[in-house]
View 1 (cartoon, rainbow, N blue to C red):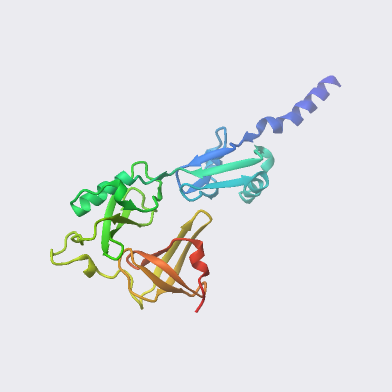
View 2 (cartoon, one colour):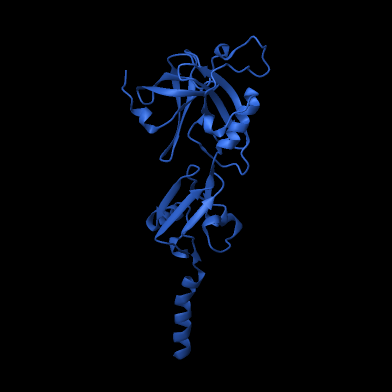
Length: 259
């Protein structure tokens, strides 16, 4: 009897001992959250590679409840009882703010004149690159504001959209690389034109969205133009960031008045 009782107790304890503990916080570097990264012990290779969810946007946080993670595990045909799940799980995406000094160095190289970090006016975006490589891909003089708008990108982060940086106190046009000296910024080609559909991207901590939109006007790099979205039945104000590419800077732009 005593031996049978001991075996029964051991049998009940085995599932508990086999549980895999999951971390209460995790920072990921890639675009997905794999189960193996969240597990606090090694899992079989195929199980470890299972994707729980897309990673949050760089510099933002996702918070999962125990019930939410249990649901994700069931969706992967795993038994939540096989895991020790914290009450709250925090997931962040490895990222860093682009340094103003790096942007100033890129601006100086492009303009062939010294540009100080304190001359720059922009909101530093997050990049996932370990070593950001900032380059300037276009520019436009804005004499009304007494500034020069530079369109920049991080060559080390292919997912990061181009971003605009205003250089205060610089109003003279800069030459366009690989173009005749007579060509000035005001003559830079339009990247977006009416009659050709453009791709609009919206990135913010709560929403990641891509839509096809119809430009209502032409625009060069850094220009703000209006576009029509058939998906939202609204006219939106967006920024030109590339060839047939525009960016909405906030979800609020999706709620502009319909026409």
